[in-house]
Length: 336
Image (tube, rainbow, N blue to C red):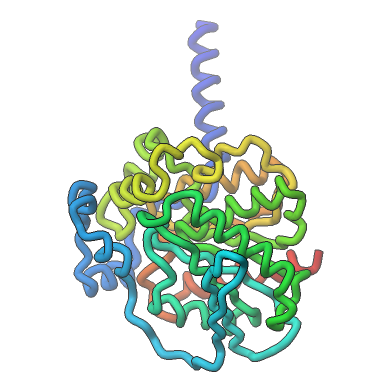
């Protein structure tokens, strides 16, 4: 009897502990009608890992939304560092001494900074009243790991030194990234801590964060199993991305930043998750680990949504909530 009571206690403790780690998880299993309509409109179909491997890489590399017009006078196209890293500098207000948002785009470490992403970057500059530095880091398969990490980190250091020359306030720097870009944000913050310059980053914003790219995680994570197919970002696409970007490097903390043991002293973080995203539990777990290390975290799991809140129309309530969360975090972080 005592043994049975002990087993029940341990089971309850395990369940309770897991519920604390996953407190932000959302499990409606009801897809937002706007997102369902978006997937139908684009004719979305799942591609298997075998299909992805057979496709010409350019079909994957340059797949993205069509370009949307915005005022071209609001952007400067420059190249920085000895590596001539391309950077787009968006200043929608044409102001001076503005907060700096350093943006790292998504695309599975395979797609470059596509023209179809530029409108959203310009909109970020407008929405947050900031200068957005969008980093066009090198991508796979031509440039495998650590090329993207090196470009991203060197660009951050250059902007921290030279951002004032382009109208930015280098005492107010935030890193922002979607998907693969969110991974790079986590890695850059950790590298900055190792180098003793993490204080230069006031906030890291990570949307659709892949933080553990090991197959063992992909095969056991609840969200990878529930959302393996059917919701734009798939488990097979994640496998293809990591084998293309960083073969043999999955246990490297600069590929899987959850493997870094000491997360103390990292910048405050916003972590955005979506119910129907295979990567959802990655973001939830990293948020919990950061909190455990004493890092201030704002996190939110958006019910009914897919990876990076893709497919929502402008002004959708979820997008408004996301922007309000980021604005609040920026305001608090920049006051420190």
